[in-house]
Amino acid sequence: MNDRKTRIKTFLVRYIRNYELNDDTDIFGGGLVNSLFAMQLITFLEKEFTITIEDRDLKLDNFRTINAMDNLIENKT
Amino acid sequence: MEIKLSEQQKRNQTAFRDFVNKEIIPHANQHDKEERIPDELIKKLARKRYFGAVLPEQYGGHAMDYITYGLLNEELGRGCASVRAFMMMQNMVALTIHKWGSEEQKERWLGRIASGETIAAFALTEPEVGSDAMHIETSFTDADDSKFIINGHKKWITLGQIADLFLVFGKKRGKLSAVLVEKDTPGLTKIPIGGMLGVRASMLAELYFDNCSVPQENLVGRAGFGFVPVGITALNLGRYSIAWGCVGIGQACLEACINYASNRRQFGDYLKNHQLIQEMIADMTVNLKAGRLLCYQAGQMQEEGHENAIMEIMVAKYFTSKMACTIASNAVQVHGAVGCSSDSAVQRHLRDAKIMEIIEGTSQIHQIKIADYAYREYAE
Ligand SMILES: Cc1cc2nc3c(=O)[nH]c(=O)nc-3n(C[C@H](O)[C@H](O)[C@H](O)COP(=O)(O)OP(=O)(O)OC[C@H]3O[C@@H](n4cnc5c(N)ncnc54)[C@H](O)[C@@H]3O)c2cc1C
Image (cartoon, rainbow over the protein chains, first blue to last red):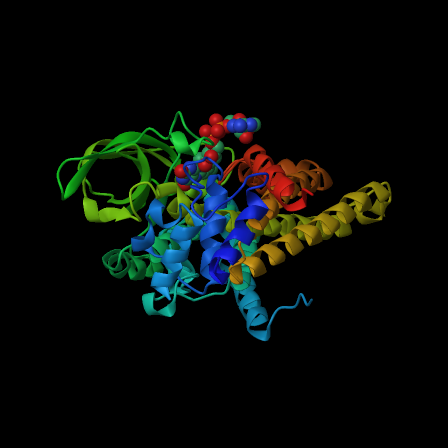
């Protein structure tokens, strides 16, 4: 697991407890997170990886899994 | 850890306070009675760039940091909750367009909102849907590739009577979405709402959308992202504004009580020397200090982009809205009959404070979310 993925996972497991989270677990499809958490996730990604998430990044597929978020960050940095 | 304003923040605070003392407090009861804010005051607020307080200077904004913006809200809230709500709405919509709007939307609207040329409003609530916002019924139906049709009914919309631009929430192909709608759009009807308990100069309206045709490019963010992150960006700033505004209400009440209790005599002594009055003044002081500290903390976290800022803002809003109700109620008590008169400010503050426990998420909804936050933060 690369460093970025580890950092994302460390953040997620603070919220998603008692669940075996893999790099390709669908956190939205699985109903694992609520709307406030989704907002916290965006804030976390922006600050942790010094990126700005914009209008054009708003696709659920960019945030569904640890792998997808890793790709999004990769493409933005 | 240091909780200390910078010299610039202090200068801004003094400027805000002077403006409120001169331009707002002498007329605030009049706003309340007439249920409107005069155009002249709206122009003065715009000239101060308060409507673009959080926008960058390139759009005519003030580029305030979140602590400075908090101080502005405290001061406006100390003067008149309706004026603060007016300013809050402009910043809520402007920030949301700035963060999630297209380049065209930013170019078209941000400068106009900051200058006061365009008055913006936020239209989420419906007659049948308040707290349960995910279940709004307003529909955005695709007409063709370039347009969609809005049908629905919004209620309790602050500034609905006078707004030029509405950020409207609805469902597009079943997905929660946000769209900008101009006031002259055919099929949009506005019905004023008057006689509210508090924040009476908010110029509320009901909005009816009857087959309103809107260009697809008016969507803010994409379909399905209307609540998170678009709506929440606005609501988060709104809650922050309310939290500080409630500190302002509390401060106004405390200052009024100190003044009144120092001059009014009963049983041969000033009210301030009666211990039951001292108890109320002490509790006001302590709660106000606690509430202000919560606001400072939440503001600093928001400034730093901390992921928990959104939750700490909810903590602050929940605490200070409850606090403002208690302080304002006790302020009326300290003033006796004088506090019940329509000429007194404290009765207005009491009515305004109650509204703060309802808007931008009721106290109960805040309690549910804060409890959830506590389980996440403190579970083993
Ligand atoms: C002065 C004023 C200005 C406003 N301005 C705007 C505006 O500009 N734009 C806009 O979109 N809206 C606006 N509103 C509407 C406001 O956002 C709503 O009133 C608020 O969201 C609550 O919704 P509701 O009034 O429908 O109450 P409801 O959601 O019907 O709630 C009624 C009561 O039930 C409680 N309740 C609801 N669900 C639960 C639950 N799950 N558990 C426990 N208790 C619950 C609530 O806390 C409340 O006490 C304004 C309202 C006022 C009074």
